[in-house]
Length: 357
Image 1: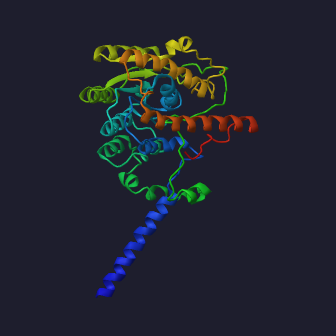
Image 2 (image 1 turned 60 degrees about the vertical axis):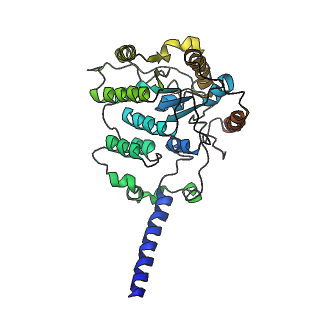
Image 3 (image 1 turned 90 degrees about the vertical axis):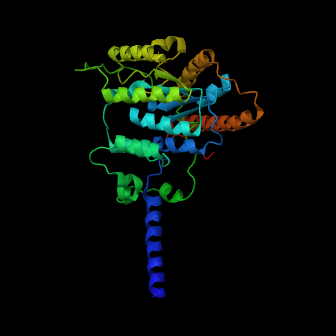
């Protein structure tokens, strides 16, 4: 009898071990390919959760703002909790989760995602949700985000979703089965130094209805309430990306909403000249996102606003904090150098220049 029990225990242990071994192998690593998939998880690697400013939103935050610039020029400690096509309910639950770790002075939310009023695709859901640690916030974010074809069990056990990924495996999947992945971002900012200027901007197509949905406003209201309950200033922004289109009707809704709720809303498209953006040189994809030079210009402009409006403390004289950020600056400058060298060698970036931190 004891022998049978022992055999059963060993068999179950082997099955469970094999399951998690295969899961570690087959789950995408998001390093050279689709590095955006690593952004959410990198937040948990922070040594201290003491940021003054947290950015929440889609690619219009993680490609357009440089926390290193905000630190170097203003002493502002910031982090970007951004991810690709981050929908407003995902942003809300990320905000909710972040406030369990820290209480920043300001949370900045980019409003482009209000154009979506329902779940969009499993692929983008995965980029947003897989990296979150398990919590009530993650559970609720998954429930709000799943398409009709998705199942919660696939999020609990990712192997069930990725079990057919054998043909896509690369050396990185084996290298990082158990090893910590390299740091890819700079406090959530994905660096690109290459340039591709604007030739033409796609013409904005008229819409049948410009009104943002009740569902989107429900989550925007929840953001306002959450920030008020935690003593955090909420700032709404629209990044200065030239497309996709940001309609005047959408902008007016945000102006009215901000006024009604006594919060700030900044449409950076209205301040391109003051920021100093040159879309022949400050974008790497013809105006959809900013490159490094553009992100640094926008961060300088916004940093001055944040410090003058919200009187955020300049922490550069705090030696302990400065030591930590000096390490971040070195990583930032090293990656910048690597990307410029790669650009010079190949004429384009073969990768995002990610190096181990």
